[in-house]
Length: 285
Length: 277
Image (cartoon, rainbow over all chains, first blue to last red; front, side):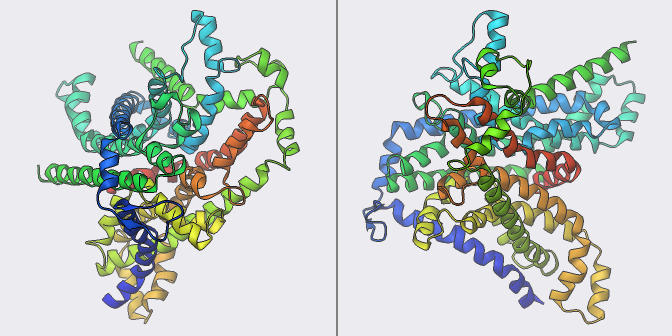
């Protein structure tokens, strides 16, 4: 039986070794080597120079800071908006479940295309948002300027992915047994009290998961930044993913790009470890 | 009275949220129905003279930017990518659930993969593909899409299979069915609903993938998520916004329609993937 079991997981294991294991080894070797596109098959091991370069690069830290700030801010906004919508609109969804499909639609659109769409929507001459802002206030900001690009991207990302928070939190809300709420109501708890002392605590695990998933996904943001502002805005929108992409494709510095990749991987492991540790504690508690 | 007021407020909030969240697609759709002249003179959401010219003009550029080619690429790589992910994950999930193989190391590894930015592996994959002549091929891109979808498929299948009743499998065993036959004739049919939910979500995620499409393709295998941006530079001088908008609508329509038709399944698999993963 066990032998058969190993046969069944063999294809997946081989697939992962090929597409993850091998690249990881290449990453490791190249990150401690001097390597260019000409010397791609004969890298010379040079030590930790690439890591030192990355860690000394102001842009590397700027990218790390961008991703962290972006990830946290977006996750907080989406969690808050998702919680508010899931609890306030619950009576609507209960009677007409298909309504939630309307709010799930944004998740079906490629983030890359959403970025492109905003290029049109925010365009100073043909964009609909500047048009209406002009009518309303007689002025509109330069959405993609150095100073405003971060805020614009936070709004773009949050509008597209609040539906995810809403979906997860809605199903957590719907899973709360009716008797619990009824009992609380019988005890004289008002709507606000029930929300604060019954619903929100019971939804806390789902909220934590939502926050983590959305943080992880926004931290590695690439698509909509690339299509909406490219590497523009004077580096004000360089996320970690954009940084690595540029180091490789624009600068051609393979060593730096893979060293940055490895640092990102190390960072992900630390985050994962923290998450699992928190998860284990939450289960124990 | 107060109750009805709150209810009205709920509808208002719902309408505003739906409008704000779906605004990019709605607004782009409006633009795609305007003539070039109207786009430059009227940026509002009102269309004075609706026209389908932009959709016709997409195909006039076919010699330089072939939308049908991009759409076909997306369709094929998404189908292969989703099918491959399911084909790899389904037997593995069964082995984990029933034999306990790989549950301690493979499952956590794959599940945690969801949290690792895949760009980390992008550069070696690019170099490897260059060497294997897989750059700009559909099969090359499809392999990566399978990699992207494997965590989701594995989580969904292993949860679903664990919940299947053991008795039916035991009965089939008694009747002399081997593991492979059992898997194909007993377990697979019982996992059809989760399989469909996984397939739909994997297809949509594949269709919308951008980073690897951008890195690993140049023309022959370009998916529509990447190809759509080509139309922004399509006509030398200014961007033909109407055509660009029409292209974006066409590129968005397949996952949008699929999402609307199967929102229950997608909602279920997204929630299950999030909670169990």
